[in-house]
Amino acid sequence: MDPEVWPGVAHPPSGTKALVAGKAAGLLFKAAVRRLPLRVAYPDGSVLGTGGLDAPVMTMLRPAAFEVRIGDNGLIGLGESFMAGDWEASDLAGVLEVFAASVDTLIPAPLQKLRTLYLPRTPRQERNEEHNTRSNISRHYDLSNELFANFLDTTMSYSSALFPLGDGALDSVPWDALAEAQQAKIDRLLDKAGVGSGTRLLEIGTGWGELALRAAARGATVYSVTLSSEQRALAQERIAAAGYADQVTVALQDYRAVEGEFDAVVSVEMIEAVGYEYWPIYFQTIDRVLAPGGKVAIQAITMPHGRMLATRNAYTWVHKYIFPGGFLPSVRAIESVTQQHTTLRVRERMGLGDHYAATLRLWEEQFTARSAEVGGLGFDAVFQRMWLFYLCYSRAGFQSGYLDVQQIVLDRREAQL
Image (cartoon, rainbow, N blue to C red; front, side):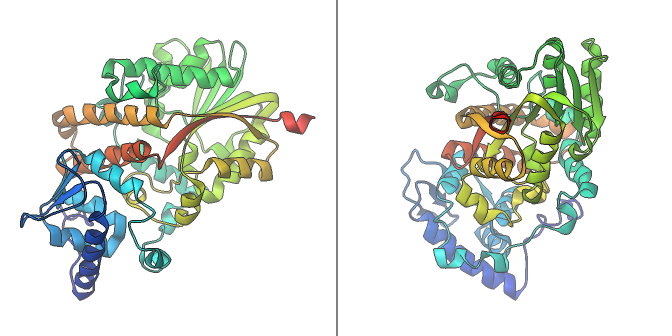
């Protein structure tokens, strides 16, 4: 493992302070897992947890390194210890789901109040100020179009699909159902926003162009903005190949800089990258450019309002390694921000968290199956463990109910009365 590439992973923290913190963290961790429905197996043969033989198993390979990492860096250390190979799990999402379901009680309440004193804060350079935003986005979305193509379906959609199945059937939905389910998700958003022939559509967050393609096929004129040069290039290529270059403009532009008037605004899982402080600006921008009688349809990953408030200043493993500057809203926060800062009002919403869990399971299976191809692109074993942890960490959030994803429709009817 190259310490210059992986400075937080190659070596566990050292020194007296780290060792003391590790001992304390180890005691807290063991006290927590003793009452959780999983099994934590240690090299000496001991097993902690209340889970039976069918429970997910967390296998400790280097418990001392694990404890030092979580003592020094909390949940960031949990992810880094997996990246380093300090522990394994045959059902990684299952292990993480147990932790996600118990997130409010893992740490004793008195210690939770002290979290701001010892947990890291967001680096200034990762805040989503306008001059930082492109670098934050590039760190994730400009990794490689080929990387994403190795685990996404042919639509290159990187958001929750909408399967035509009841929730009970989602655990076994097959890979070959994903592309159609992604298109169903997009079509529902376009329907709710009233996108059809002649519609002037603003898309905030291009992705790799599938929504713009489907809107153009309806006869809409699309202005789509992105901060990822890699995504823009492939989206433009796909749009031109489909014959819609005259209908679709893909601009490398911050959403705050958009001008003009649009009949509809659609944004799929982009608000998560906006940042807590900038939600008013995000919705004010939409309000500013939306034509009279226009509609807005967004898809947003959400968390419970109480957890959102408790973690809004936290710096997490996901921030450090996956989405710098990101933060998930609650439904209540979206309703509050739009009521206080815009003329927009939430009219309708639909939760599809179980559909996201199924989507992530399919991505995880595809990513794992194509490990050799990903390695051939130059992504080493540590990166692949990091990405697997990210996919399973996300799936665990939806499976536990800690996370949800909502399709939300907004308009100005109240303001027009």
